[in-house]
Length: 343
Image 1 (tube, rainbow, N blue to C red):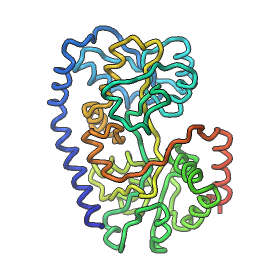
Image 2: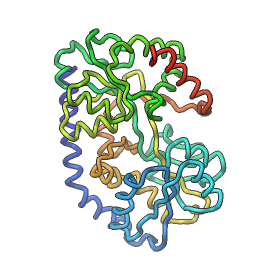
Image 3: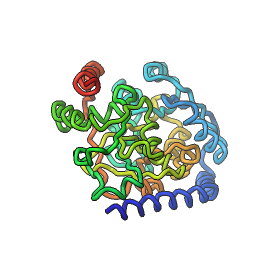
């Protein structure tokens, strides 16, 4: 089992290395496919993502099509207000913001051959938006420590069966939304009491509750921790940089934070908006992200990165139709701080 895990990491690195070499060729193919399409005009994309994440996408798309999207970074409330005012043809944002805009009637259905390939789990109600990538919470194990284990922890519960001297690390739940999402989802699936009990039992082995999502991956990669709970993008980033890590998708399921795209009512008649939304689902777009050290999981099942990162049989927790309110979420996190973190 451990040997298969090690071989899989080698495959990930090899596939992505080949994919990067193919990026210029793939971009030319995409440009050829777009010849004759109406790409004359402007495209404004409202986004909750940081500038450093979207600037490479805008530059590459502009290079191959002649249309450089103008990204406008905003927080969720500001973005919703802009959509209500008829500003922006496209939204590229986190799932929470997308749900709010959809509930407000700010999107037209986004239906295309590209979006149809994406699993329904990543579609908004009535195809209001479609996920383009997501970041799951996973388990990562130091490669040297793997050799000392009889079996790898393949589920969240199996973390309890690790040797008593195992050094664990994770991002503090209140410190990052992706980390908090794991605690909320586990509580939804197994109940708050059982989830708190689980974290209470592994609490004595946690050597650090980190402030940043990247810290647990770095600690495991440098041998400062043996097993960590970490975001998939950070685990892959450190693996790509040569750190000795083994990534494990928990077989009992895991949480994820999704980023998706939606066409606003203002952009409903724009062929440019639909074309860019489709491009975000391609290998070309994901490889641009990869070249800038952003290793999110594509929602497109045919993408090269999907085959390298995800494999078969991974399980994601279903997103509830009615997300937990901010107040209930905070009460749950406060309870974890009182009953686990501070003990």
